[in-house]
Length: 100
Image (cartoon, rainbow, N blue to C red):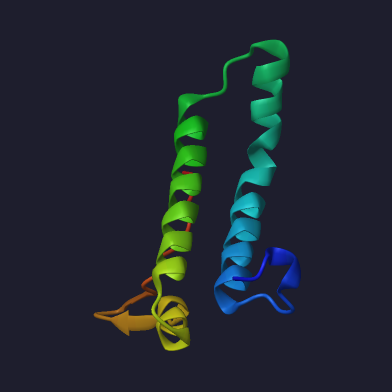
């Protein structure tokens, strides 16, 4: 029952969610100029870029939901742990979509 100002240290979920936010922003930053150009000049951004940017934001939200819903530290660790099955390396958290 303490206000945010009383928190002395951020929790692991907050730290990991901020990390995902930063990664998402890093993914989107190189194409931000396309959004700005569209807003400033009315020059339409290619629908492929809009779709990809939306997919990145959707993935960011799903990753953060998985982190927030993790039961404990071990569950958070599992989300970030890569495993290889049948030659495919992946992690439960997944990866950001790639713009093709």
